[in-house]
Length: 191
Image 1 (cartoon, one colour):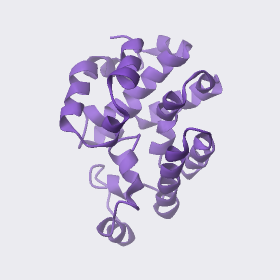
Image 2: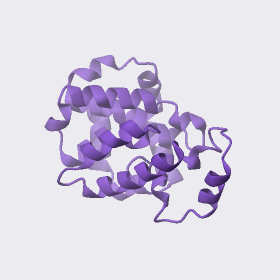
Image 3: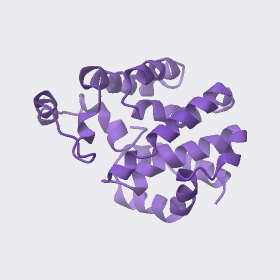
Image 4: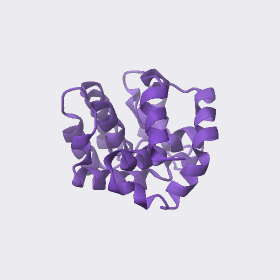
């Protein structure tokens, strides 16, 4: 499996709507095609991919996005978020984002949206505040609102075996689609 195959899958073989919904069949396709290379990524063995913008993006997609598909309904879906964030930060430091298309930048920046750090969400707002990423910027506002309120995403508490506070339980019981922007990072990074 090569980085160009991952890029082709994400940007040529799939429709953007596929990344926005919970689809077990789509998850299985990703698992079947990319599980082995994901194993290499999680061990840090794709370090040679970090020398080129699209290759670096492919590694980030493996860890930030495909983890959510491969390890759905498991705490392992979030296990690689910090590594994906560091790789995304490094790609931005190298100015790789300036060489990517708008849709590719959406994927590159997604680890910022997954973070449970207020400081990282401040940076995410800055990154998404550009033409073509308005929808992601709006979603990030919702993400940040939840982090500012709780310091974490309560929707992850059960799967991560965290005890919910009374306020979080009330929030979860009242969760509706307009408040549920964390569904972006609890299930899919691009929602």
